[in-house]
Length: 176
Image (cartoon, rainbow, N blue to C red; front, side, top):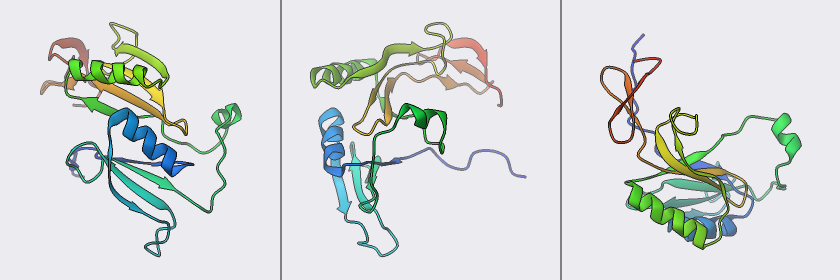
């Protein structure tokens, strides 16, 4: 069996939303995202959902919002956490440096989006978690958890985990 990763990176996330217009406005206001394309359900016969492709910069899309007009949506409940199909825990937006990340933190607070966790440093040496980055989390209108982060750690050629500044943390990866 051939080992190794052939994909270059995880590129975008598609999130199902209950109100397309509300969600578009949320991502525009919070992140300044712009619409590349928007398509109604069944514009292509095999695609029964409405799609909106949002971008941050010059990628065609970084986030895809989907909405099924034939579905009756409801808010998630506590019971849904105890039983039900799996979902995803969160998706994340990376910022190029701490200064830019702090500007996003300030904007998030200014427009009144509730921060549900953080700001914090993910590290066993800080708040006890993993990843070696600074982050904070919010929920979008449908309760999707979104992380905003900078200075993500890396793995050097010898398998040591390094913090966002390239300093060896003394931890090794499980698989090299």
